[in-house]
Image (cartoon, rainbow over all chains, first blue to last red; front, side, top):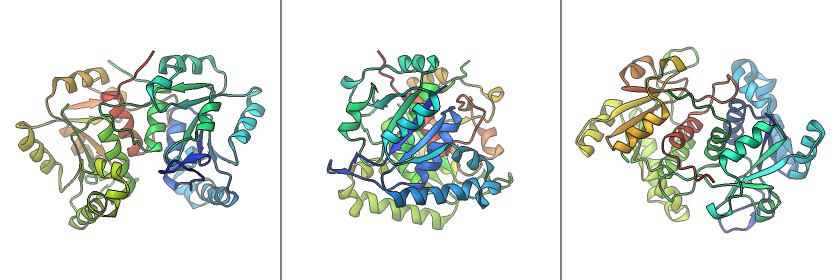
Length: 187
Length: 187
């Protein structure tokens, strides 16, 4: 298992499809870190170019990793150990290259079925092969086109029975990690 | 599709395995309502015996359903239309019985593999048959034993590649709805 997850706060769209830097959301960190640990993700990168946001994230992490939260909520500490703030996607790719000896493949969820280039079962196989894979998620109204264009592969969008397509990024990460790495112990 | 979801704030355990009433979490409402709408869930019941909590939930819902939020965020309005506050599980069962002409089957996620009585594929078949099904989720440290004992069936717990078992309830709901009602458009 050599899967990494990055949550990007830039470059992402806002509701008017302008490119913005979004502010980080406390619950994104907790929920995604807990899902990442559940599914065996190596590292969860929180990416924002804003220095003060990264400092705030570090303060928050140290509460849970070293402060009162670490003894009171040891299972949070364990999950939050996976979180690494970074300034840019390029920095994340660099860290993984240093750690793993090779650049990761970049994987995104596409906005439409027609754009998908990799099936979930193909992605599962790829993960089993063990080469580093970095799955990118966007906050706000989604990853900017320039990031999507950089990706090596695109998974089909998550669809249920309706056409409604506004899952929170927390839910989307949980579902995609389950599709790619979940074990369904079935009858 | 005749699937209903209830999030119980009582009776649930706290960290010390005492039975408590938990306070509702704003993001649970949004995330679970959005997942419920995505997967075609009929209704999402927020269950708490505390009158003031239900009033607070109603105020919050009216902001998104009728107030400023409804025009500013129409996709939130659509999801939050599914939310129904209720005082107890018995009340929820009564509402579904009135709406559907029969009591729902109660489904929970079990804490261990050994306890599971229904596979995910069997649950998918059950859903396709169209009889009302109510899936119960607990806040805090999980549903009290008395609720688990009332359930007609138990699904296997969600497992990834590690033994870590502390997903947020928001993530757990998203994953279970995807396992039961997701369409994987693969290859």
